[in-house]
Length: 359
Image (cartoon, rainbow, N blue to C red):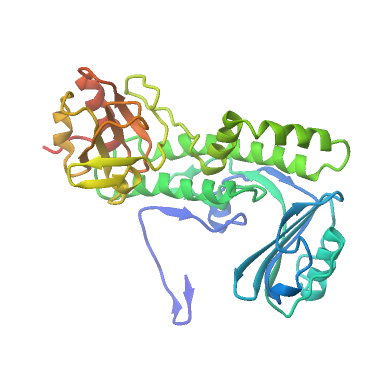
C-alpha cells in the first residue's frame, strides 16, 4: 500500500472487502456483482438552519404526490440532516459540483416549499442500484456489507444487513485464527448470509417500487398501511427491518421451534442479579443458557469451557425452552425443553459450531 512514507507490504491470512459498492477487493477477486442501476436522483447533507424559520413539513419525513421523498431531521442545535429522493429523475453529471442552490431547488420541487439554508456543512448526491455479489467468498477473500450487496436505504434494512454480515463473519474468522474453527465454519458465511442478502435486495426493491409509483398505487399503499396496523403484520415488518426474522439452518441439532433464530433483548434473572440475553454475548463467546432450574444435565459443555460461557437464569415466558446454546452471533444452535435432552444433540451442536472439545 502507498503512504506518505512510501510503499509498504501488508500480509494477512485473509482479506475482507468492506470497501463499499464499488469495492476494489471484490473486483480484484473476480467476484461478479450483477444487478440493476435505477434512474434516480437523491441528495443528502447537513445544513445550518434557523429551526424557527422551517416551513411545515421541513422537519419530518413524507412522500409527496409527485413521487418524491423528503426527510429533514434535526441532528444538533441549528443543524438539519436533509435527504431527498426522486425516482425516475435524471441527476446532473455525477462528477459535477453539488451545492446549496441544487439542494434548495430539489426541496422546492418535491415539497413546494423553500428551505432557508444558512450554511451547507456537507452535501452529496446518491444513487439507487440493486446489486448482489455472485458469491461472498473467493478462496481467502471475503466480501461484506455494501461490497456484497447494495439496495435502496429504507428503514435501516441496509445498515442492519451490513452489520449482521460483519458479526456473522467476524466470529468465524476469529475462530479460525485462534485455531479452533471446525473445517466448514468459514464456508457457512456465504451459505448463511448470501441468502439473507438476496432476500433483502428483493424485498427492498418491492418497497422502492411502491414508493416510486405515482400511477394507480395509492389504493395499494392504503391497503398495506391498513395491514400494517395488525400486530402480526407489524411484527413481520419490524422483524424484517431489524433482522430478527433471520433464521439459519442448524445441522446436527434436534428440531426445535427456536432453532436458528436470534432472540431479542430478553431480561434474565440470574443468581448474581438481572441482565439481558444480549449482555451475556458481550465477551464474544458461545453461551449456554440454563433455564431448567437444575432439571437438565448440561455437563457435556464443560469440555468447551474455553469457548462457551454457561449462564443459569430463572425460567422466562419470553424464551420457550429449558436450555439454549447460542453461537457468538446470538443465533440458537441448540435448544431443549424440560426433560432429559439428547446429550449427543448438545455435543453435536457444540462440535459443529465451536470445534473439538478441549483435551
